Amino acid sequence: MPASPAPDAPDAPDAPDVPDAPDVPDAPVPDAADAPEVSGAPGDDAAAVPAEAVTPLLRGITVLRRLTDADGTLSLSALERTTGLARSTVDRITATLARMGYVRLDGRDVTLAPG
Image (cartoon, rainbow, N blue to C red; front, top):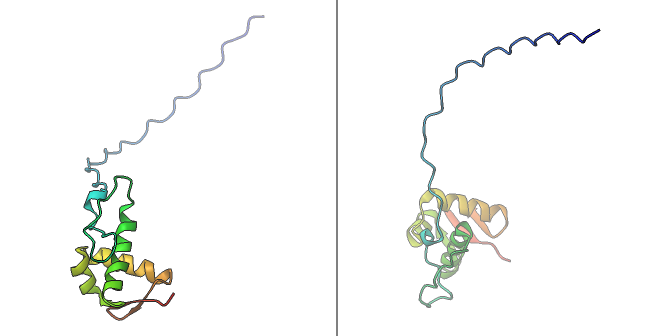
């Protein structure tokens, strides 16, 4: 006896119409060239930033160096001025450094932690 063909599977329901997401331009990728200049040592000319540099790390080191140059304490607004970084960036960097124990936050002042 010949095999009968399998019954056709029911058609899958059509997917609901979902509008396409609007085209959103990609956010710019930070470039090492956008990082603040980081000097090799106090008083030295700014060192060239290599292409493989990690920009957020350079920014954090810049904050630590500015604190060191100021004898360990600066206000958040002074860090913003001396580093050239946006206030939100200074806030995030100092909060991260405080969580890691490198600085203490006391109101609007940032102080290097003894280490």
